[in-house]
Length: 298
Image 1: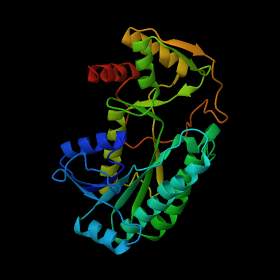
Image 2 (image 1 turned 45 degrees about the vertical axis):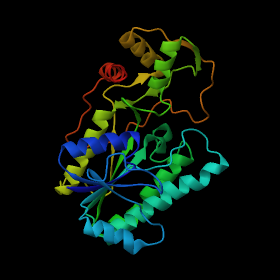
Image 3 (image 1 turned 180 degrees about the horizontal axis):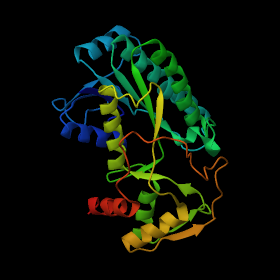
């Protein structure tokens, strides 16, 4: 398949790109102005989508014979937003996403995989955003309905929970704990009773790759507008995860549980209603995933 990936330079996108290359797909990626292609143009052809020249974008998609788009690019804001976050949240998660889908439809791209978040479903509701980031993600899904109901493009969304893996520069909990384990410093955290649904990067990219195959082959199990979730086989409280981390790494975490309060809209019990991509199941346990992270760092 000829696949265009947005957000290919990010944590999930870079791992997905590398896997799809091993499967012999022809890949393209979008870049920002001034951003370098980390894969090399001979491996992954890059393109900067114009906000002003739709015809140029469509021409690129057509001449590249793009079969499908995996849309990972996003402006992420994990807590309460600042006023300065409003414009980039809307520009990236709504405006750019809509422009991309508009281009795809005009170029007659066959399928489009969108990325959402479980934060769209606070307290397990059909829709209740944890924050403005989640609200922009929901807004794009609602906009997308016009496109896939009035055109031939197949559209599906994968909602992500927590993610982790090697070579992750994001301020995620395992990275934080690894530093604390090495330095012996004391870390203040929430009471730690919130359930965490966390998946290893290999499982995540497998789900995206499999869904792409389903959409490309017209799998009838995938209805247009379907929403899937990448869920762990088992959920743990944050405290339980800390115990597992200590056991696997043979270290001691100096954590002051309860030093920090829960956030105002802390997700204590993550969304449970998401369906798995047909044929997909998580394979990497938390214990195995932590071992892989440690092995990659030495």
